[in-house]
Length: 296
Image 1 (cartoon, rainbow, N blue to C red):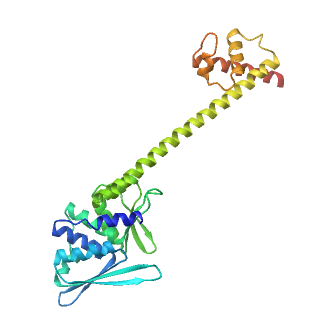
Image 2 (cartoon, one colour; image 1 turned 45 degrees about the horizontal axis):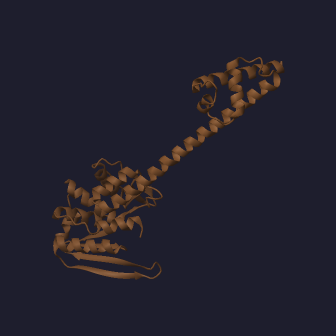
Image 3 (cartoon, rainbow, N blue to C red; image 1 turned 120 degrees about the horizontal axis):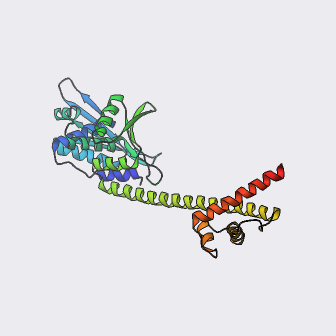
């Protein structure tokens, strides 16, 4: 099962205690992928279609729980996809409350976002990427949902795709927060575990890359130092060098790959890292002058 399916299964068994929250959730579900029919006599009919059985079951339960009216379910199989379509039908004056539901309280906003995701939402596999989205048919519907998500301090955005308006979140931390808003603690914990593992891997990779870069830098510097020292040896010899420079030159040739700190401790009179670095720079300057003199 996909991660989206797991989230929807969890949300499908979350029922608000208050009737106004159930109305908000139904309003989102039917607004996203349902249809309203209002007759002249004031009655209203609702129709809703989904391929997700837990979502169909929840919608049916909410209709019965909120209005206690007859709700019909039609199940049609799709042999080509190997799936089923679940269609719900309800009729009655009471259903006008779904169409004109007022979503103002925080609990109702949570229920509305939950219903919108159940009806038209999806989320990518967090092991691959972080992407949470809800597909809206109308621009004003998308703006309404985006502003509702903004009310929880989340930076939802809208993008147009194939004549639909997609309300989406891309950051892992914000997706964790929206799962909390929808009251999906199981999916939230699973996502947090994935994020922690990713951050640990990224931290280890950064450290390894940093250490690798440092090793390359040390090796490159050591090779350059050895080349300078060998040039001095082959050109004028070490006899004309001061004692300190001659000692460090011989040590570098003896320990070609040693870092500066280890090179300093290998001397008869130990020398600190900065002292070793200073002497090696002096040797490089001498080698550069000899090269310039030879070219001249």
